[in-house]
Image (cartoon, rainbow, N blue to C red):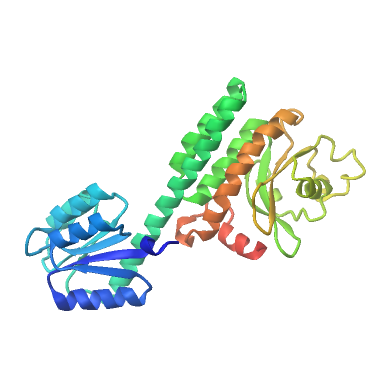
Length: 331
């Protein structure tokens, strides 16, 4: 993360409060820039980027709401915290409506200042990460559309994926949407994301669809087709898990799965991952494998963001595994 990503602008005409707040936040590792008036603060904002701004709502040359609106017009991603010595609910509501992240009343505790600023910066980082991921994923989709002639159902799967990724919010939820899209594209019953850790274990990070619960419990370290996909970095199709002596005693066949499509994830440093799709409505095809490679690229882009996301951003649901714990355990 660049230094400017955590640069904070403090605007207040109280020199003591300004100095104390700057010292508290500087000790937290932030770069602090101070201003004694609204106009000075706005000039500083034009000269350099800031991740957050903390300003008094009553300033000698203007009011904080005016400065807030100007900041948001310059950079809507700046986290703005308004500080006031006046208890005004109407002002607080107006500040939030204008884009303020939160509202802090004087006198405030140092711990409250740090907590709110860190919470706002974390939310900002998550929003920027989501935006970057969506831009990258949309670029991949556009490239695919230009190079491949898609059938109606295939096109529907990718269009729906793009829409759902925009609505997903947290990277963990984006990852789950990718799994659902891969399952829809192939007709797979369950679809799971597996990752091999440094200890050699190949464990499920997330799974969707029928029998997803069973898939989450499997260790595919001894699954021949998974190891083949890792070694060749190419998709592997096995239409008869139970009938092939090489796979009949593997974890997937022993769990009762009949057919598999394993698509390795590209570009994961140090560890290897794969999308594993099982028991499709029809036999898996090379065309499906080629299209799922795009889904695998999506998953590879999202995994680092999931690993870095705060636990609060990864609320669990019936189909979702706690990726934070699993990613930590598998690396």
